[in-house]
Length: 268
Ligand SMILES: [Zn+2]
Image (cartoon, rainbow, N blue to C red; front, side):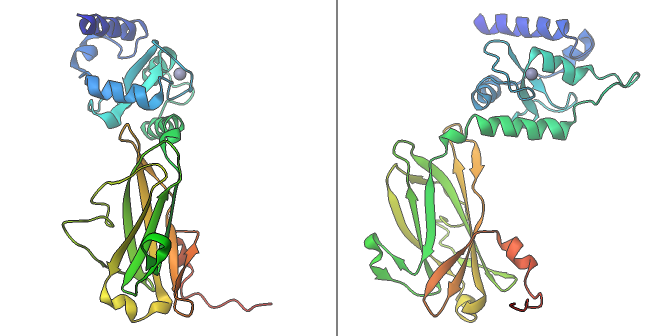
């Protein structure tokens, strides 16, 4: 009963604000499912994804592409004013700038990020030639130690880890156990607050041939309690044979690759 009333109200509001420009168009448009609407409202914390105003009850879920489907990617929570503006642009008498589909999607992601980033626990991770509690166990290439800590005190962490290895510019594989794809993004990790995980993975045997040019990129994507993905920035590591340790390169592999094979700069 309550649900039907809401549907009715949605229709009259859209009509009042002239969003779809007529009842024939309204009849064709498919509604968003309750699950999609709920997810949009949670991710935006009921803020308009154009003006970022807290709307409370006065929020609607609009179609970004009016001719598009009614899936999650085409949904955007907006205030009455911006719901009307998204659909109001008149091609016959163009004034101002219409809202672009790409623009609305980027803006929506900014708002979703703003109201969910507090759900991302602080994670610290690094590569190491040792593993285990107190890093007591020494391991050797092609095995690489991976330690990750949840530094938060109350948020459990759910995340995916994706490791890629490179010799010079060429990507080499990981030796993956298909039953436990922990390091190829195939499985969700759980790490409770204050916990540390001491793990390891194995590279392709080729990795020991040319350790001077061995690099590993680690990508961690946190999944918040609403199932939204928060990719952390990529981090690269270079192996140093002399000290048998991994140096952190605070950048992505693609950035490093752009400078490979460039003539060495003369110092001073
Ligand atoms: Zn608005």
